[in-house]
Image 1 (cartoon, rainbow, N blue to C red):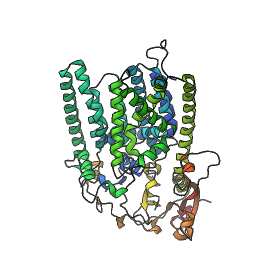
Image 2: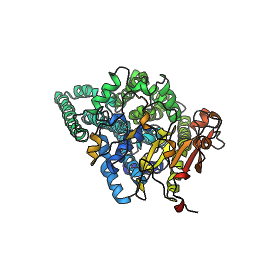
Image 3: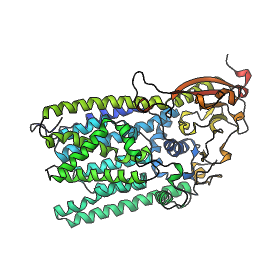
Image 4: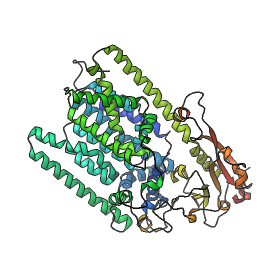
Length: 565
């Protein structure tokens, strides 16, 4: 698994077989994927649900008053989601169709990168090692099937690196515009080092015309995509909105507001996060950085050296920039995960070239690393699923229980499924039926001690565009609690909630009221009380601190004459 045998085929890497292998793995992972980021559920799946079913939860960013989120990104996924809705008539099938679509796109991007590495560096070993590292990278798989602009940015960054390695630099400015305008505006920083490679490339070929073409592609793609974005958002907001600009202004220039309202993390956050999520790949990433420095400082010959250096510089610039920001989240690292895998694969491939002795020992060491990385990947993914899946099981119990009864109406005219402190784990309205026996099924918030701004339903309207253009009441951009979001517990037909035993003298059922009957208990993991190694990895004998997730039904709101049994 080191340098190539000279007799090896020039382009051995099988793109089609590799794609199907990677795609199949990600499809399997889709069925064991649990949303653990409320930004994905509330800011993307819920508005998508609105576009498909004409109702959903709205965050303040989608209010026409603020216009921080664009509908452009959502509309990329709407046609296939609508087709799945028409074919299956099952909301969970629609949800999974979105994930499978993301699995297809991400797999294409990753396999093209592997193919480009072989072509650009003339090293099959490098391409093969990169593919194997992608296969066992748990964080990259999560990013690949996440419905987030940072994941879309990752696709664009990966394709931009592919363009550099295959001597197609003109795709880089287009992908930059695509990522910034349709995805995440801050991701533009990742592309800066890759865009700057046009200068030495143009100098090498003595082509001023190449610089002009590069500039024209940048200008034309930026203007054309911006015009489409403005047209789309003006249609949905019914006013002129440039969402990428609004989100930059809010995060950078707003006083007393901005991302700091949602939490501040230390500078070491991303170092720890990548170490815990990448495991052995994080060590290889450090090795890759060292190997690349050796190649640069010693001026060693390397096919595609300029492209590899630019790609590494892009990853470094992004990592350092994000590390300096007060507000940090795991998904902010998504755009460069493909680049991290590439740098790690570089270190794995060229370590024998630099060291030059104990070559056979290093080859066996590389194989051992792949085995360890595979074990880590399986253990990490199982741990994430075990840590977060209990809440989904509780909502599944609610869906099954709902079909056993008919219900008395509440003042809001709906069947209410309520939750409190577990609001951010709500698995979207794709996990709840739109109605039951003609009565709408809706999510409601109950008092939980949370003092931030909870999402509310999009306003009513005749059409989707009427709904999205209406300025909702009781919204703010300062994360201030809004009491109108809270529903009285007597109006809840079902409650889904967790309980930490030593935080209250009384049980959850005692505190809520005797009219609630226990439907099901699913045991989840308390991340705060579970030791680090048992929280990060799954293994036999894992000592996770278990807490109950309750699904409760309000028997006072069941029509007695229709009670089964």
